[in-house]
Length: 86
Image 1 (tube, rainbow, N blue to C red):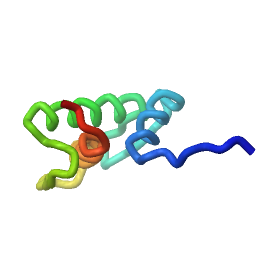
Image 2: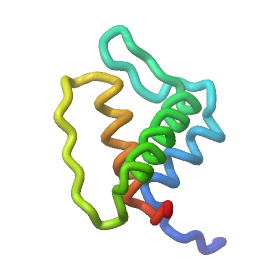
Image 3: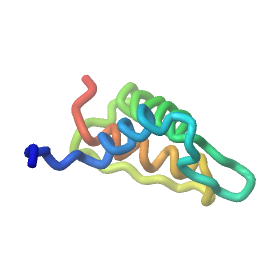
């Protein structure tokens, strides 16, 4: 067996975005996103939060209605916290 480190959750999102780019990742009501779209959107959120000064270990809160956009912001915040983007 080949040893494999445990991937972090943001890594799983990125890998699914690469390997399952066109497969459905999430559906909320009438909104659907593929893994490629979801990975790209969460990456945009992570970069925007970093540009606003969010650092690894900082706290962030999300106050939104349930839906695809809320998931993108939540998982984007997880990505932003997974490494220091400065």
